[in-house]
Image 1 (cartoon, rainbow, N blue to C red):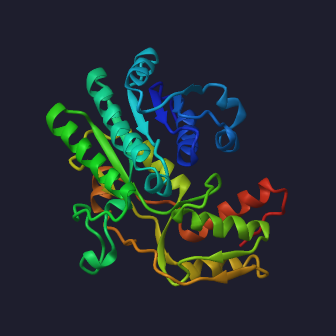
Image 2: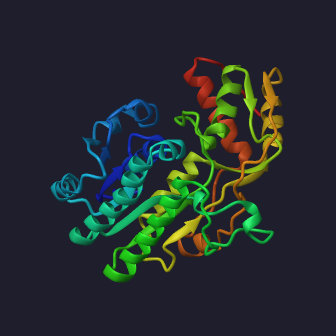
Image 3: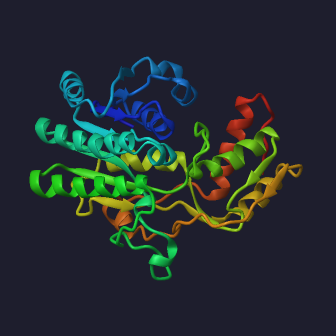
Length: 323
């Protein structure tokens, strides 16, 4: 692949998805500036090759600091922004002022800076949390333009950010794409957030640790992080799209089916199953995404889970498993 030579600023670039996006951009020869509130290279070091990592510029900064943000964009002649910085759902619920400030004002600052500096493209992380509970919608796939009924402050802030992106596109011509991620899993995701359970299933299985699997009677969407990274980079390269925010979809599979698949490699799983609803729709219409961005996932559940499982085992010094 040829050199990109485009300068990207990645907010939240030290995080889970951000680290994979950084890796993919570096492989294309792009200039990468990571802008993060805390420069912790733990995940980045795990994902990105050491030689390529030397080319990354790390800058500590808050997306709420508009003056600093603009100065960094100007200093590094950034032409594209990938905005992934965001607190987790439970953080927003526990600390509303912080959540609203970082999510709504942070996205507003990104869009305003893009307007002033005529940034070529903004790609940012929205969420399936903009939608409400399944009973709010007709049976079948959730349409891309389905109404928002967020049940969390996190979802409400993502919904507000989608409104802001549409306003800046219509009023000021800012070219942006929001991507509504679902349950992204893979090595590098940590924490106790609701959506982290998919990764925890794989990590605990890989390490032989006990785990009480939540939502075990649900069918959920399995989005492998490398697909999401590939989508994010692809979205940064397309011409202006008609749609401002897109549904995304990985591989829709029952949680029990995933556990059975892992058990075929590791029969001694120390898992107990805890039933209960996840509480959000999981089946999404991605027709606009396929038509306007030309993206389809590469990884099936089986391929993504096996790759993640073996990465966790390799990092722990354990022998990889094979199909």
